[in-house]
Amino acid sequence: MDSQETKVKEEAGHQEDDMKSNFNETEKTKLCLMRAFAERQDPSSKEVDDLTIRRFLRARDLNVEKASAMFLKYLKWRQTFVPNNTISITEVPNEIAQNKMFMQGLDKQGRPIAIVFGARHFQNKIGGADEFKRFVVYGLDKLCSRIPPGQEKFVVIGDLKGWGYSNSDIRGYLAALTTLQDYYPERLGKLFFVHVPSIFMTAWKIIYPFIDSNTKKKIIFVENKRLTSTLLEDIDQSQLPEIYGGKLPVVPIHEC
Image 1: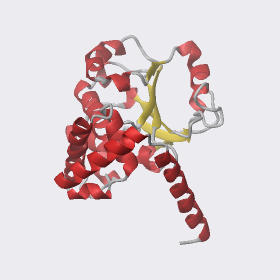
Image 2: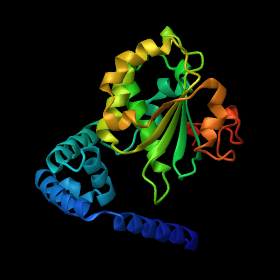
Image 3: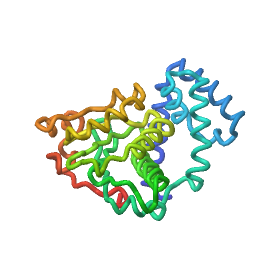
Image 4: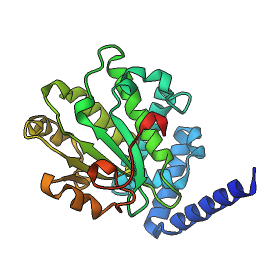
């Protein structure tokens, strides 16, 4: 390991320690209770860090019983759905071919930014729903891997320009929502919907009841005339994608 890599890892360790120091006393107590319970049920939970466990606690308003159930469900899902702890490009070729998810830049809080083009999404008739679910995990894992030390969340821009009924995939949307809410709690910082056509609201009315209250607070529908100014409130121009008036080119997620 070279000196630069050592320095980066040491800095990451310091920032993680700083985040842990921000645990309040209630969180510390409940985290200990939850960890003890989880380790009795699934010894593999010993390998999970405190920050991850705290995210599950916060997702369930510090209710240890509910958070533990959610966390144990996550561990079981991860072991079965992602047995190699990663989804490879070879497992999602048809989804990658749609070229619909991009990633570039950080917002003002240091959260990585993803852009998803809704009009490029079509139901996967070759790989089916399972491949789409794998792609969702592939994308979320990529995003999480780019979260810098000292931060826990990411930001998504959902661009719906050109979206129509041929792109409507309610089952797919609900599967993605379930994956995000159940297995990546407290990871979403904000979700900006831009270029929203009125036709999309028909699908939105079906999806909305399945969104938990915490996630609903993070969703922003951006007016077309205020698109750039709204995004600039959270993202510096140097980090904003070129297509929204910024200076960064967008990069396909599989090339990141």
